[in-house]
Length: 269
Image (cartoon, rainbow, N blue to C red; front, top):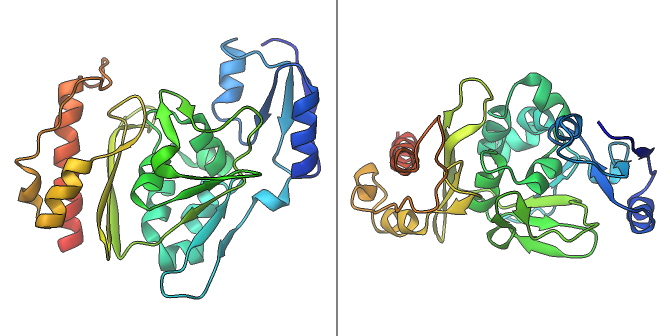
């Protein structure tokens, strides 16, 4: 690990101002990816800005009392806090299900929602949830719909110096997450979240490609007929999909269909 300077700001404004004055800084929250990368010398920031003490980035809240209420999860909210939240379990249990599927308890006790989506690992669970659940990512000065947030391998719409302050979710009528789990890392070889809203079905996919995406052809088929067999005729091209010793691109394309059908069957039962 290369030498670096450590900073612990006491407010979001201080963190942003500090970032602008340093040579090559990086923010850290849970550090689940950044710290191992630094140990392997794959990342060498000049400074680490620790956000973990910023209370304004923490917590889970309901934004309004309307029938179509939105729920806000702070960027520093840890995965186990999401998984165990009574508010999440009551209104969006699928988000708790996704959070509980991340890694192990050590990871879930340290890793944060904001850090996970900012890192945008192609096998991360949460991006599928954001895409399927009409999420909006809030930084210090702008809002980005999840549909426009995940761009490519470890690449998002965040600009240098941006901090994920919170994420807003719209609770679906029904939703479930199905995951083909890597037995060692716990990452998703493929993960599929199917969510039903009054205006249609949304299908978020992670693990298959360089970044999470919506399976629009699946959504169209399920909007026509919400049955497992409705996706049988849908073609899932595997061009550009991840391919490694754990699963070929072709197999990942196959898993998308299998997991989508399982999710639909679960929702119907």
